[in-house]
Image 1: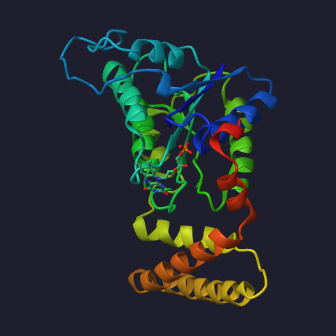
Image 2: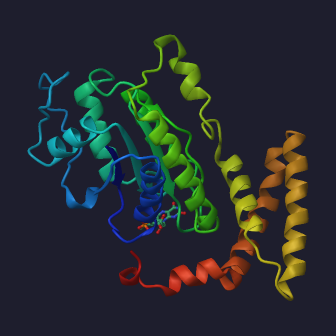
Length: 281
Ligand SMILES: Cc1cc2nc3c(=O)[nH]c(=O)nc-3n(C[C@H](O)[C@H](O)[C@H](O)COP(=O)(O)O)c2cc1C
């Protein structure tokens, strides 16, 4: 069983949609799948109640942690999806995994659990990479075996759905057993995960690339789109010359102007915004 945990309060939002897409990819490979909405469960933050937990199921607060913990334990692989809230994961995702970590402390039945984290930055796009870090840090401390994540914003939404399906297939291929990372490879394994070394400026550069890449060449906007593409070329040159700081004003300008055009022109933006929550499944 591959379970997808959705950390959004919005059951018909983008996080649920993209977790479902990953699960569909896994299902194509023959996996049994199930989606779990964390908003149906109450899990408080760790109380640091200092009970002897290690290896056990008990965990201080009397809430739904135990039910979720058992779902994780009985999964062959997990997808954890969170919307990006202020460049971070949501508190229900953090609460579930940090309680799990407190109980297991990187030991127990889930060492090497194949896992995929998906962060959905559906607003400005800021934090699409930054929010991967707290989630993947929890994966690291839990000693799970994560696949690389990928950027998800409203600007690259259609492409991200395709990438999610592919990642779901890859996850299914790993789900036949736990795959613990040998202790002497822990640091390099997690260090080498994609986006791990990104700073905020690297993230903004990637965001500029995603938005400009999504701009349709239509009418009078075509020349602005091509001007922004040219500017992106200058950003790349500055990065190659290790002059990142000088690229910041160019990146800001690209993101600001490209977002404005994208909001007016992008068919997928209009389709998503016009379709009310109730109509989406
Ligand atoms: C409290 C809050 C904080 C947010 N912070 C960010 C943010 O830092 N970056 C961003 O791109 N979007 C941000 N958003 C927008 C959400 O990422 C976006 O609405 C996303 O689609 C929510 O996922 P959902 O559709 O599953 O609800 C924020 C939304 C809320 C409610």
